[in-house]
Image (spheres, rainbow, N blue to C red):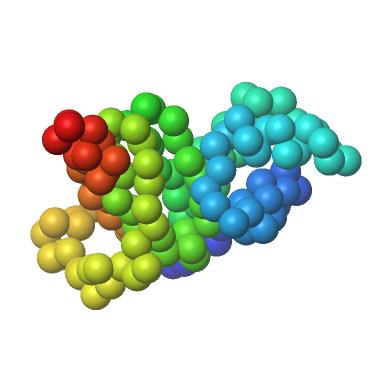
Length: 133
């Protein structure tokens, strides 16, 4: 017995298109501002509600910065990051350092895996230089 998932709504399609066209991850606030300028504006709460639904369907991923800000991108954009916990500087890794990692069946039992994120946290070179001075 297969479960069919409904196609994304028109508003969700707008969010997916905006995320796909962006050259970087976007926050909910940035998406809201972009859509506010378009033909079909939507409220901030609606933007976040649809982002959550898209994430639950495995169509977008969410990454949280040390500041607490959430950034969104399509899951087909397989990006991983180095992030400074002091200034928040983020460097995108050129490729996934763990592309073929598979969870053991007992680790993933009961979960439908949708996507993965990998992020390393540390202190950037600028911060290290300031501390050395």
